[in-house]
Structures are given as C-alpha cells and as structure tokens.
Length: 238
Image (cartoon, rainbow, N blue to C red):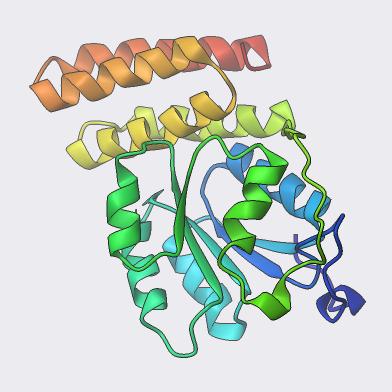
C-alpha cells in the first residue's frame, strides 16, 4: 500500500475527496478489515499504509508520522490500547487517533486511553468513515462545504476473507491457552461480522461464552475449527 510521495500530500481536500492530503496508518491484522479501510481511503482521497502488528506499527512510526492512526484493539502481539495510550501522550501528537473493535465494549477503554474516537466493526460505510476522521481535524484541514455525503458501502475482495480464515485456522490448531482463545474470538468475531457471516459469528460467540463460563473449550474450539475449514473448502465466504 505504500507509494511514492506525490502531489496528493500537498493538495487541499475537496467536497468529493474530503481526506485528500491525509496519510492513514491502519494497524490491523485482518486483511479483510484492512482492505475495507483501503477502499474507504481510496474513495476519500487519503493515502494508506498498513501494519499488521504492534511491532510493525512501531517500525512505521519510527520513520514517519501519519495524519491519522486507526488501531485495532486486539492484535497478535498485544493490545492496541497500549499503542493508543503511548501515542496519545506523545509530542507532537498524531492529528487523529481512532480505536476499532468488533466489540462495542472496547469503546470505553479506547477513549480512556486517549483516542479521539472509536469505530465499531464492520467499517464499511463511506460517509461514516469520513465523518469519524473529519470531526477531529482542525478547521483549516476541513473540506469545503457543502460536503457530499455518500451512503456507499465498500465490499472487500472475498480473497481477503479467505486469507483471514486461513490465518485463524492455523491459530486454532494451537488454541490451548486462554490468550489464544481470546485472540481467536476477538479476531474472528470482527471478521465474521464484517463479512456478514452470521453462522460463523454465532459460533465465535458460543466459544466466547464457553470461555467466560468455564465450559468445555476443547469442544468449542473443535466446532469452530470445523466451521472455518468448511468455509475454506468452499473457497468463499458463506
């Protein structure tokens, strides 16, 4: 997603491309969710870079400062909350810091860490995405009024969904620790809701319920694994 520096970085936003001139760093391990943000940025005029872990995010941030930071709460090497807090307290501060999660309960922790806002997955509506960023930018960075509001909803490539399922299938093979289960339910829950895969979302919720109630996790993991494998075998989201 990286590209050469071009005139987009110095051009003023327009009513049709209100995020023109902004660079967005999305810290997200889901390819499906990242692809949705990429499409939203493309429609809005923003450039985008992606980091799939805390470690990679810190590497990006060591060499440049984005205009907008979008951080998933659950990442493979730790919580996005810690990254949000450290960057919210940094000087100079990134213009807009947003936390995202498929679980609305995370909103309070994201805002308490210093984020400007919270977006609940799925992230798909163009107008809502633009507004979540623009409402925190200073007046001199705003597009001219009136701004065109689009009800467009982006649809990421189903191949990205398959990649996410392949990733979580590998994690499930070693999901014998509580941390693994928490990561599986957080990651796959957000992906399933983004892809509108209601049966998979229900299975994820069932596993999360077993985890919280002390039920038979082995059975829950096995059932979820079988469901993931059935989707991989079908070569497309259901």
